[in-house]
Image 1 (tube, rainbow, N blue to C red):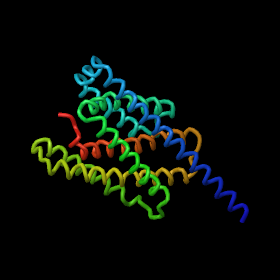
Image 2 (cartoon, helix red, strand yellow; image 1 turned 90 degrees about the vertical axis):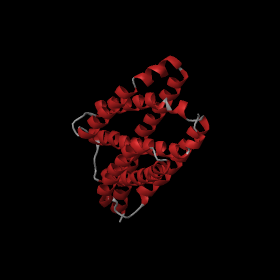
Image 3 (cartoon, rainbow, N blue to C red; image 1 turned 90 degrees about the horizontal axis):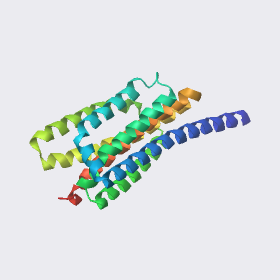
Image 4 (cartoon, rainbow, N blue to C red; image 1 turned 120 degrees about the vertical axis):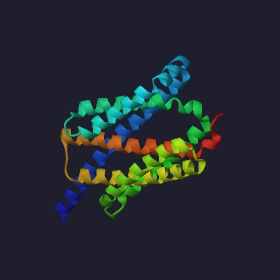
Length: 229
């Protein structure tokens, strides 16, 4: 019995260490994004340049995500960490536009709401007993459907569709937060360590970071009534 208890404690320590490392990377990314967005918005000349280069910056963001996702097992943890930080910084540059499009109250309220929702869903994903792995395919098709709806709305510009997309987006990325958290916990339970664990922590941080950022954007759209004219 004592050996079993010791083994369980070691397993819990491994999971705790891995999850702490993952959330540390994610928190660092969010802090960098927020800092870069704020500093960019405070510099009129830089903000104007960012607006002019917004499309290339967004394409660079997509490229970094694809590289990190597709080559996660081939990149060293050092390279993966640099790419993740670069992605967070680029996101901060593009997000600076939000500080001009929305009031500070809307942005702060949306961020606080996102943080609370993300925290609750992360805890749910960590402690829930039901296996969520079967939901992976559903989430993949749901994201694709959401993207299609967003593209269609670019042409029809329907306020009702915009509201529906925002609500579905919040629910979808809240669900993905729980799903990704459980997948990361299961990954830690598999016994990864060393370089492999560090690389997995960075990749996991990226997944959670994307869940948070996308949830924040959809929640912010729900608060669009507070946006500036």
